[in-house]
Amino acid sequence: MPDRVEIARQTAAGLRRFADHAKDTPVLLGFDGFVDSIIQVVDKRTGIDQYDPIPTIDRFGEKISAAAGQSSNFELVTTLEKLGGNGPIMANALAAAGINVTYIGALGYPDLHPAFHDFAKHAQVHSVANPGFTDALEFTDGKLMLGKYQSLIGLNYTAIENVMGADTFQQVVTRSRLIGMVNWTMLPQLESVWQKMHDDTLADTSSGDRKLIFIDLADPAKRTRDDIARALGLISKLNTRADVILGMNLSESSQVADVLDVSITGDPEDAIESTCAALCEKLNIYGTVIHPRKSAAAAIRSGGSSKSGGGAIETGRFAGPFTAKPKLSTGAGDNFNAGFCLAQLAGLPVLESICTGTHTSGFYVRNAHSPSLTELTNFLDNPPPAED
Image (cartoon, rainbow, N blue to C red; front, top):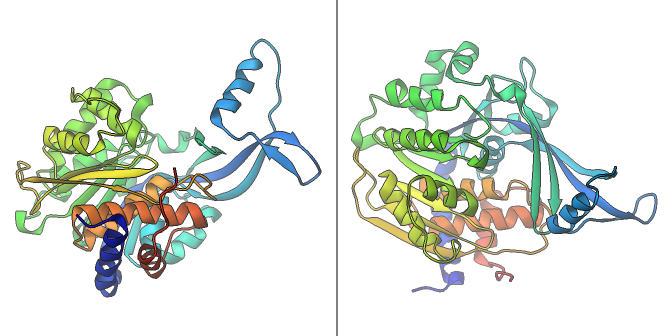
């Protein structure tokens, strides 16, 4: 089997072959939208412009626990305000790679929020609601996302239709090769869009012209077991209309496995490849992908899927270019998803799709922006070693 450097260079070559087709590859993503404030929590202030941030979530937790029964003050320093939400970040990454992106979501209504103005220069945007707001407290070992998303609760298919019209929505779906529908957790009525896709919008798609649907539940821990089970059932139904890929981080994959009664033997991270295969088989869908921080795995049905699933399941695992000192970690998973979908659109095999995802994310966390296709292929040509 080729080593990871050789796989990365093969991936770069495949993406370069696709480069001339990227702008002619229409995709649709939706339907959330957030304004993200990237924040550090001050541990010690050493001067007017100097401070030491609290380094880890564990240390922050200790400070919070120590404040029980008394008052405590935490200084928050906003280091960056930017567009956020799983959908906009993923869409922005695909647009950066040259893909023809249409975005439908909560980006400000009736006027676009300034955080999305630059994004709207690179994608065709239909904004149907006001965004939510997220305070992302970043630490070296992860992040705490504090969300305010009241404006998203009413976002459903009817709201989309009322703003852009049923015919326009149908046209966008019909021309798109990929449909990304993410952040189910914070969009309580997103299933109305999935149901519309199944019952109507995709009902006439022939088996020979199946679209790719990418779904990310996005941290479903706050939703009930029955909610998750219902959503997973609808995801399986959607696979009768299109080739559905379910994307998950490590925690999400364990939650999904628990709801589906799929057992994970041993350490969940060590088992991601077999878990992908088991979940793909259980859901009877085209594919699954799991992306922990240091590696990723996927299971894809070779030759595409049929209405009943079918097809042999091919799996792979790849150790990504993890770095312990990212410039920006919020959005890393969404960039992985964008890279994985980019490779699928380019027709790359499973292992190269995982490689594209990990290196898109790896570039993003090192440079605090999503790569262009040229930047990504150059990064793949000379992949940094994975850090411990």
